[in-house]
Length: 127
Image 1 (cartoon, rainbow, N blue to C red):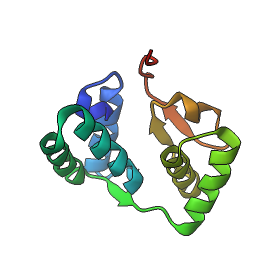
Image 2: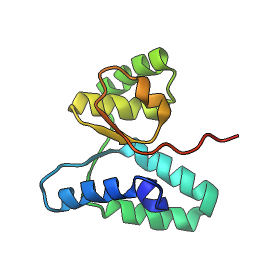
Image 3: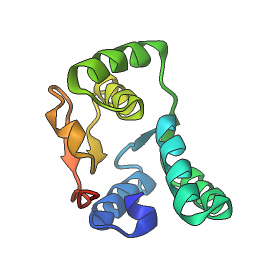
């Protein structure tokens, strides 16, 4: 979403994607993130915009990874312990299982112990 919306942190995301394009870095994206992006864009900008953005995402130099049964079970523990949304818990569990750094802008994830993370600038809280 940071890249699609040109939000603060876009430069960081572009740098990671450039490295992935040059094959100096592997960027993994949870397929759950696709659900989150499509839903968010469709809600705000409509279904056609969501389809266009989905096509752009699928063309990025990233590897899309579906959650395994083990990831989902681990996500259940994270969800219970840290009061995360199901999507955030699955994405965090996948990152932890892969030993990957999770790049995000979700303040709820900051408390997750054992999660390597790079926090992008957080969005202002909704009132």
